[in-house]
Amino acid sequence: MNVLLNPHQIRMGVLRVTEQIMLDHKQDEPIVLIGVMRGAFMFYADLVQELQQMNVICDFVSCKSYDGTENTGFKMLLDSKVNVSDKHVYIIDDILDSGLTYEFLKIHYEFKGAKSTKGIFVLKKYNEKFKEELSILTLPPNDSRWFIGYGMNDEKEGSRHLKGIYYLA
Image 1 (cartoon, rainbow, N blue to C red):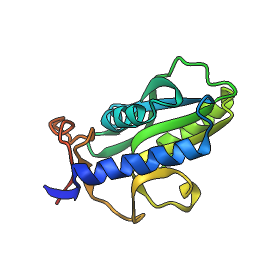
Image 2 (cartoon, rainbow, N blue to C red):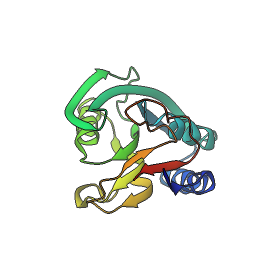
Image 3 (spheres, rainbow, N blue to C red):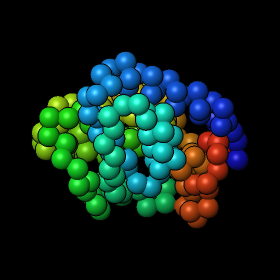
Image 4 (spheres, rainbow, N blue to C red):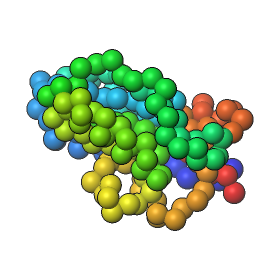
């Protein structure tokens, strides 16, 4: 295991992302945070705690595009329940890789009447199509490392609890 981001670097990234959200919205304007389970749960919790002075509506969605390390295509397992009509929606996920999951969810919430949708990721592989989405760290588009920790898992499900982000060599 090699360290990509230590807990302090993650914390600084979370603060930078929440600062941008607070700049983009009035304090009383409702924003909806949709956490993509399970890989984003630690990041999601950190964001929610830092946005406590904002009018935040919390919900979750469960979808899957990987089985272990194999990309198996998008599957929606559980939709969120909150009414997103005429609200700003942030889709919170662990990593933007191919963009398949994010693109599906973005269209899904726009169809449900969201005023705007934006993705926030722990890690984002650079993609011109998604260059405006927020992230703690942007990686080169061809980065093929597998990341674990801070909610992200290995295929044995034994690394979500780690406080840092690591990659497997």
